[in-house]
Amino acid sequence: MHVRFKTLSAILLAASALGAAAAVAQDYPTQPVTIVVPFAAGGPTDTVTRLVAAAMSDELGQQVVVQNVGGAGGTLGAGQVAAANADGYTLLLHHIGMSTAPALYASLPFDPMTDFAPIGLVTEVPMTVVARKDFEPATLEDLVAYIKENGENITYANAGIGAASQLCGLLIMDALDTKMTEVPYQGTGPAMTDLLGGQIDMMCDQTTNTTSQIQAGEIKAYAVTTPERIAVLPDLPTLAEGGLDNFNLAIWHGLYAPAGTDPAILERLTGALQVALANESVGNSFAELGTYPVPADQATPEALAQTLEGQIALWKELIAAAGVSAQ
Ligand code: MLT
Image 1: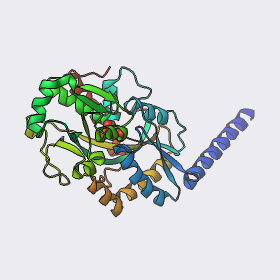
Image 2: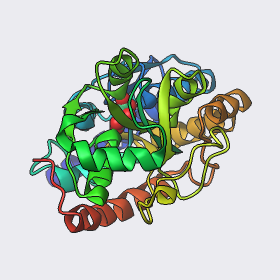
Image 3: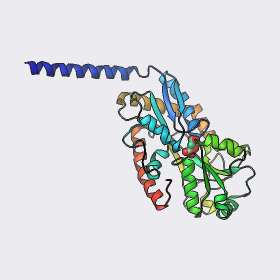
Image 4: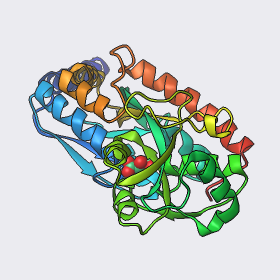
């Protein structure tokens, strides 16, 4: 009898805990939601996140604030979200770096596959190879010859090990069989300031951070990293046109919550992400920056999980084959 009573109390307790959790998920969100950007303010990840966060705020009826936690190529901010409460109030918007970091770092403060609950893919952004306005090479052909000749005398800005800008540089250096001097920043926002100021020679960065400066003639642009030219910068050749065969790099982004987040909260967040990405003004802003929001069937946990898993395997192979290591 006593045992039965205990069992019954346990069932009632569990049921009431479940009920409370369901109520919390139903009311979510009751306070502002934070999206951590694992890079400095003013850069490409920050720009994309702020556009999406504003539209998600409207849909969720709560403020969605952006917090920049730059450093260590995005791994600091990602680690912070992995360790955060799984209550739906701390999220992460990160890019391809989630899949390259395991191949580039000997140890990481998080496991991309098990420490996060995917919410959905967000966008895929081409990269551009750019330089300070008065950098000597005039064309992509000149640039290739110049890099081969001047190697480590060239300063190359990036956002740290595992950042998209670093990955692009590693692949270019590998293709040209040379090394440039890498200068790490907390994000390519501050790196762009130094490129504009002429303190640094070159960078490879996403169109979301370079398009307006290229169009205004404030920096020099040599190439895009995608296999095809892009509509927003149609005169820019592809790296493949410059002889870097099969060069293909576009930077996919995803939105994550910490693992263990209530499925009902995740569903709410996926819905809000889909609404944000379908927003006309978000689409127009993305287009001006050389990118586009993913369609709704990609802004799902399943699509992000599948992309992440496939990309971790792919980059492990490609990074090992290129013999590049960041540490
Ligand atoms: C990168 O290089 O990974 C990004 O451009 C960093 C950033 O968003 O600042």
